Image 1 (cartoon, one colour):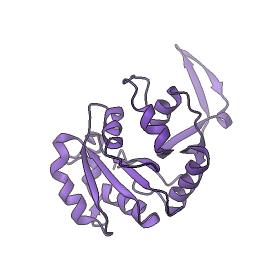
Image 2: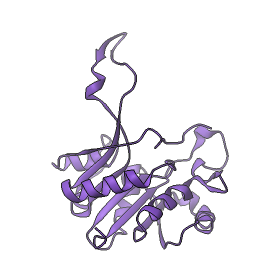
Image 3: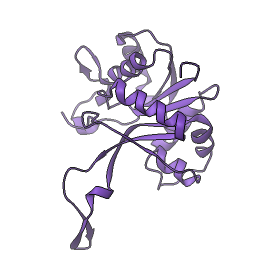
Length: 212
């Protein structure tokens, strides 16, 4: 798969206020470099020829140099300004892609993504068109109806992670659609365009950092 172009759209669009810091969580230092840098390094180590597109809110562009200087790997990074919502931020990132290939959309606050997961998603996206990292639900679930609730079969449920990986000829046309508040992630956008979504086996340690 070395002849297939690969792109990482890394979305770091949140303010990170739940961490209780003035500095957004994706820029907080962890083991000597910003949280965001760990995610970039993981993808570059797994796929050295990947092209990285970093999407930051306009008010956080000044942090970009800190991220780039901290990277322990050599990579060219295209910096893109984010939008009003995640949908618009990803849309802006996709606009920076030049050529067909496979695109990973990943949360900047998920620093523990493994090379195994990255390569698994790549292989499945090449074969099926999409690969959405997901893990089983470990706890009991109930659906709320007013002040009552009913049990849900957790075996039929999955917790969705990133990366969410697609062929470019699937995700880019899907993001030409007008914004819809029902779009909660990339999979919902692609599914709304009429394309089936395929889940890939995720990893428990691939957490999204939201609290200290």
